[in-house]
Length: 264
Image 1 (cartoon, rainbow, N blue to C red):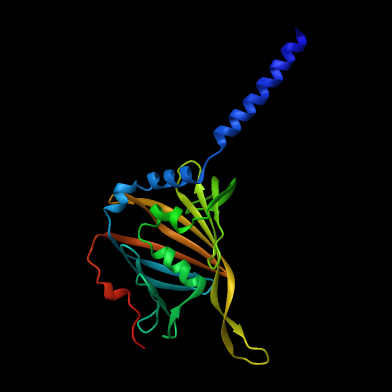
Image 2: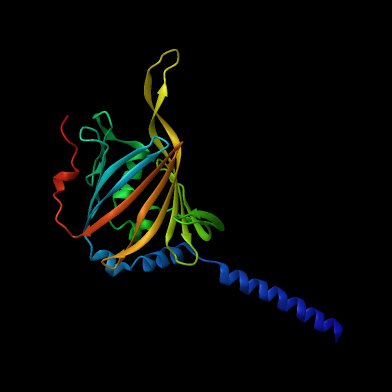
């Protein structure tokens, strides 16, 4: 009788562990569906067809603070304009087909390669609804704890981590809050132009290099039924970029021509 009791007890413990594991297991589809619900749901997202925003763009340790304008239009047009001064403007844009950039010196270049793939995915107006299509190889990586630095304090958050590895595209990882289902962080290993000093010369030349980027999404606010992060922090190489949106408007008319590359 004692032996039988011990056997049943061991079996019960094993069964309990299996049930706990099954409850904790979550699929990519569940994580993505919970995220869509958390930011307002499919119906609310699809009611919005354009977005304009203004705010500030800060780069440290360079000490640069500039005015920012953002224009986005369904299905996949995007323009980010940073006004450093009256004569110095940085721009990144995608018009649904081609991408282009205007650098601080005023030079305009065509965006190509993995940099273009990254810009294209960012320009998808309904990216939250299309994550499974944009990242067909998206897989569940792990459940872990990360630190998020907010306005007042640093918090520890439990997150689900999804990862995408695709040929000719940047490797990306997405961190979704276990409690709120909101996207808190996006890591990107992408190829971007970097200024590299020429050997034996005081001059610099532009070379492409794979650079890890960490992007944090903070201060989610509901606007027209959809939750939007008003603060985005980016850690790129040795620079930290903070984008703060102070005004966001939806469904204002935006001309398609705004996203086209200017003639040189």
